[in-house]
Length: 147
Image (cartoon, rainbow, N blue to C red; front, side, top):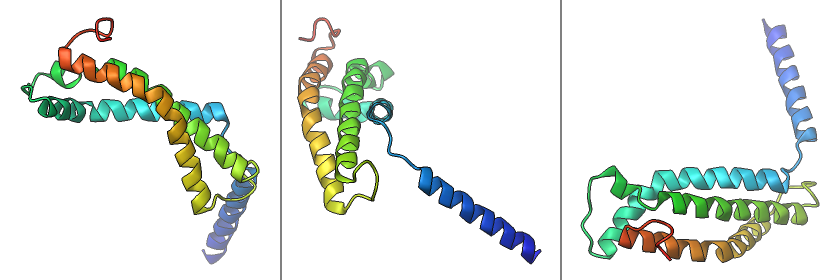
């Protein structure tokens, strides 16, 4: 029994070592795709809270109708997906730049700088889309009539 356990531990250690050796940084496109999916999921989870927050801030009535909670979700998801795609992609590019394509781990300062640059670049995408989403929620109009 002890021999089997030792053999399993050695095999596991060997596999872990191989994975560490072959681990490569994600491509820019892979980072962007992961960011787009993550952003869309986040929107669908948080949209009811955003709708209630905006209604309360504007002193509008809050309805329990699901259409109220998800009004504006299409434009919000359509805007957040590219925003988070840009954030993840730029963050990945910066991380690869700092670490010579994954040759070492990021320091805390490099991690902070990568995230900050990704966020700053994505602001150019997010600001116009936020205005359209809020306008659509305020007026209840379609995307075409929101701007």
